[in-house]
Amino acid sequence: MENPPRVRIMIIDDHPVVRAGLASMLSTQPGIDVVASASSGVEGLALLDKITPDVILMDLRMPGMSGLEAIRAINARPDAPRILVLTSFDTDEDIYQTAGAGAHGYVLKDAPQELLLHAIHSVHANKRYFPADIAARLTERMARSNLTPREHQVLQLVAKGLTNKDIGRVFGISDKTARNHVNSIIEKLNVSDRTEAATIGMRQGLISLMD
Image 1: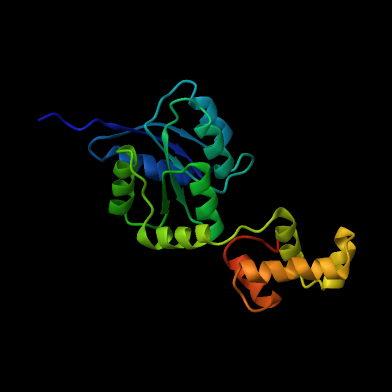
Image 2 (image 1 turned 60 degrees about the horizontal axis):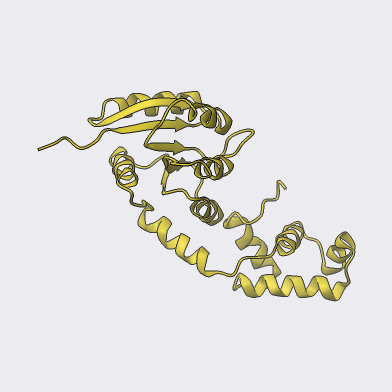
């Protein structure tokens, strides 16, 4: 019986300790070769001109080019490797955006080693791997109507405590138009009022008070 094909792994993560730990752990696993590691999306893309991994383990939060941007750039290449997101972040919006960008799986960094290995082999076998809880949240997020770019901006200001009048002044629109935007947001997020909309928006990663 032939041995299954070996899985060539590239790690893209800006934390050197994480890269070293993953490389050390994966290198002890039968059938897995860590062929490259990169500290940024830009570095990872450059390495793809020289090295052809089967699966990329991709962090999301990195300086410069984010993991999401790197996923899109990699998937624009011919014969792109499979991409498994490995991150500490699991907001609904993170999950939704990475799946939409073409990631083939999503695993949290605190997941058991056995789960990560299973995810790697599943993704390598041309399957998608989203654990049940993450898959359920992805399905729910996809079922919701997306907010328009302006509604994202309005929700950001709602979260900061601005009134409809304040929002109208910011965008140069009438109080009524601002109120219509807020009502549309409330309806799309299936919440009861603007306070709950802001809370849900932050919880799901749609907005951030840091913006």
